[in-house]
Image 1 (spheres, rainbow, N blue to C red):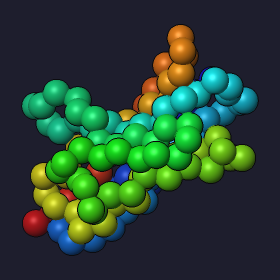
Image 2 (image 1 turned 60 degrees about the horizontal axis):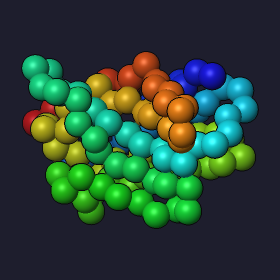
Image 3 (image 1 turned 30 degrees about the horizontal axis):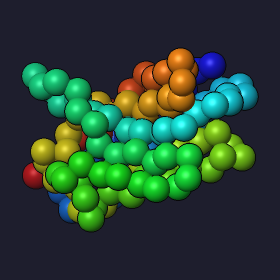
Image 4 (image 1 turned 120 degrees about the vertical axis):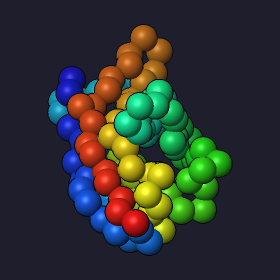
Length: 114
């Protein structure tokens, strides 16, 4: 199973981007789909998650601006990012896990200019 993240790019502050993460192949037993990010010189941090029942959770820094969603039929998780700030600049990684399964995407770069 591989996760392919896409949708990153360069955007001005206040703009929007939508990230996608598609899983190749059929995956079962996934209970959490999440996005993490790593800014230059900083540790990777959790951004948002959606659990199997549909409940979503967000880091305080993105709450009200980012929305995580999923399409189970397409094995895809999305991250809609609005009102972007320069401090959102990072490589964004998708993650799908459940039980012993823990899959990570390769990362997609988001750069927000001021």
